[in-house]
Length: 443
Ligand code: PA5
Image (tube, rainbow, N blue to C red):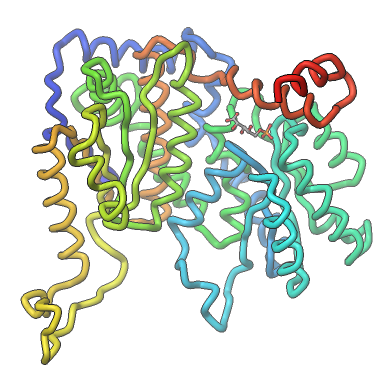
């Protein structure tokens, strides 16, 4: 697979034929739709089923928003937020805002928290811009984005009037149900559908991820192409030892059985930090149930070697790490010689920064293995839309396989309701009177 190489040599796992069979059987269940949670398998063939006309419709709407606004506020949480955020961060120049000329609208996010200061500061900053909004909620009833959307919708209507607001707000939600669908129909917002059979954390390749990314100028066709290639490369018909998703799923399950309860996803490219955040939701929500599941953690390197490095090297030996390694940077910077050489670094003069980064990566890998931390390496050739598309689908497919190998339903999330009940009871939501009394007595 040209967009991704998986190296498990330093994971210290030896596969038996049974392990390979289990992984293949899990992958076959995803394909046949006979496993647990089979109402939510729409993502499996999603890349190959996205049509050109669907991508065109997304691009057309994105172009309209781009023409109207220089700041597009994307409202959503969890699976309705992290995919777009992750790809956008990976594909963006982090110093874009320092540039005098802005070619694409700035896409910012709201509704992923309930911080009063966050929303206040966003609303204040937005006053200097022409704004539009994309509101994303599959259920249409999630509290965090609903609060943010109330405020942003009101601001857009105040500024541009109700009629123009319908040109500046796009809703992405369920086809038929939910408060957001009702509102979008009532207000005449352009709408994209989150398919019923695609859960939030698997929705990055639906309009949930694709529309905000297209607005930001990301090549969504290339992103989907990369995912399509990975869909083929990880199909259930591919032999186990040629299928990177099956191998990754199998190796992490073997490590888990051997007491490695925490997986740290790391990268030496800070742009990939939010890919880790997306990955944490994907694996945490899919596998953390019935008292089981690897705890997904993340680090950004080399920064976190100066904070988490000590623990990884010598703390409790329940960790393994997976490194997303980027073979080539997009740009070239060479370290210069310095006459005084007070920092003693002239031995690096003439070397590219990426060479130093690569030696850090190799050195850390060996040090961690020596310290008892097995290492899995996922190499992508460079960061671009196609490789990121392939990486996203790789993780999704591996997650489905891994969840089935673990023996859980990877497509539900019963545990996320518990906090909502308490929050509503504490906020005196009508219908929660009894729960309200009970919870307040516990405070
Ligand atoms: O993966 C999931 O299902 C969740 O993270 C949801 O995406 C998140 O709770 C947001 O839900 P909704 O899109 O219904 O607002």
